[in-house]
Image (cartoon, rainbow, N blue to C red; front, side, top):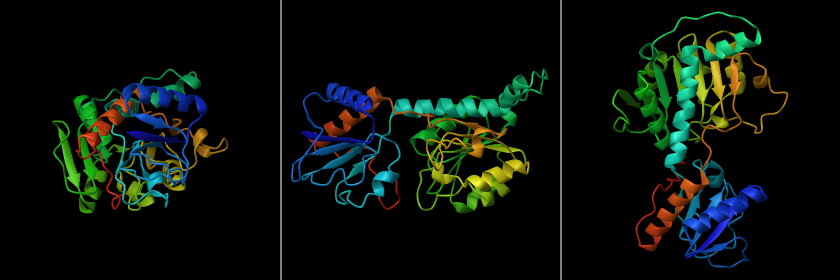
Length: 312
């Protein structure tokens, strides 16, 4: 098959991706450049610029190398009739679970407070709580949400997981699965730590704002590992400054890189990560691509297809 590769990455990263993809899929022809009307069976993409796939004919699949596809869906030139598959990478899911576990452990055990104490040369021991006394709510039960909920439950936290649509089986023993708008207020009211892993859609944009924060108990913390568009930044700052929220761990932002003068950089109750909670692992992602190409060749439906109506 002919595979078109389009990505908004630097030349070194582009070369690395092509090397790994070619090694995983050696019997396919990889196209880096094409002319209008050129035929290709599949496009493998990583947030390509709008219009990047224009001119290709015969496409049977667009395979994303990124887990999020909102930017792809905003491209009006993306062929509406061609199936779109998102990246569901076990290595990325594991990395996200590790980051969420670090964030929740740090909040639970006061490690961010101890970091501030170190800067102040302050020696002060704080009470040590058990994980079983720190309820955690995970928003979103896709592949990453399930991995995170399972990892936190295995560490002993009481975990609830909420999704907008119909409930799924619990991803791990001890995880309570909730669904629908009516179930969210009670779930928020019982959460000490909120971990957001929702997909970014028209319905979830701005969900982390003042109305939601008001439903969290005083002293709760927020961990946003999904998309910057979920968060209303002024509302978070107001909730932190008022003392209603205790701390926020943020990996994603409305503007990336985060501008140098942004208040998040210096706010004592905000921990900033530079969008590194779960980076795509080229080797494992290439294996996912190879598996979907094999399914296409055998006439089987590709895995992890996007429902364009839902946005994920």
